[in-house]
Image 1: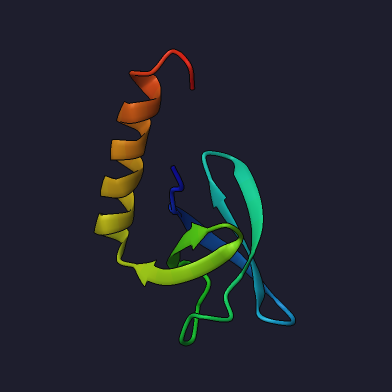
Image 2: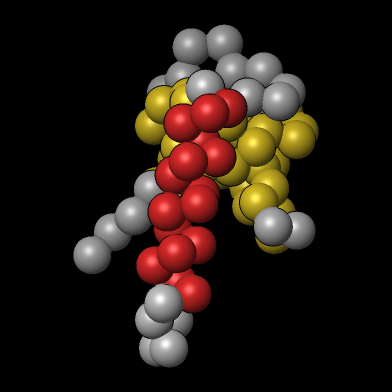
Length: 76
């Protein structure tokens, strides 16, 4: 199963790349598919590519659901 994870864009770099963060984990990913990404936006990232932006409420709700899944599964 593949998942896309919301990441807060903390740095925009040359060549349509960005750095995002969640729970003190930093990830570099492409923002080439996004229209006008900005610092502070939440990007939904799958396989190193941001596929859309999310409003803060949706991003935090998604992260909360993912945390419930991980916390409830001893194998993760």
